[in-house]
Length: 234
Figure (cartoon, one colour):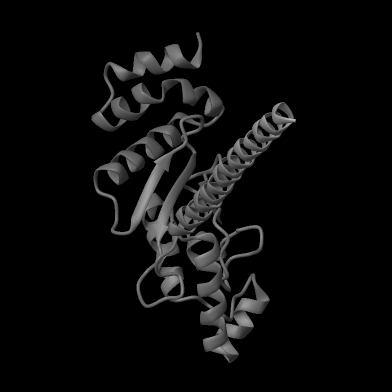
């Protein structure tokens, strides 16, 4: 029997959180059918609760191809160089979740001591301090707190860590600049507006050129007509 059929059987007697996710994303379970059923149930329950009561400034999206691949957007907290930015993060749940911690990554480029260049996040909650009962919501809140209180002494990005500890103003400016370039929603809108103005200028230039060409053509016709009249007189 296919994974979809197995899931369809479960739906009939499942709790609300399982019916919601398993019915909506039944076809996606086939991508994680090698995982223990308790992991799928655990993730489904956590995501259902997260969907109904998301933390402030955190917006999660479900990967409809793999429910163990969780993506969310975290709003940059006020008073930090990340304010005004929207940062996409990703959690990869392993086969041993929740006994083992997931791996966490920033998909949006960010200048932060505890985020490697490949986006990997270093925080004790996902290492030595991990506990099976912490849950996905707690992880996302921890990542948000990391934007408020970075740890320069445990840095994956050594440059950011050094600036944070020795020249905070320079760190703030650098992190803010990266936020404005990579994490602000308005950046795409500005680029779009610039492109639209560019196209408008091209259209106006083309229109003016066509008008000028028409005027020249009319003048040429008039000159030709005058020449013909002159020849007839001769």
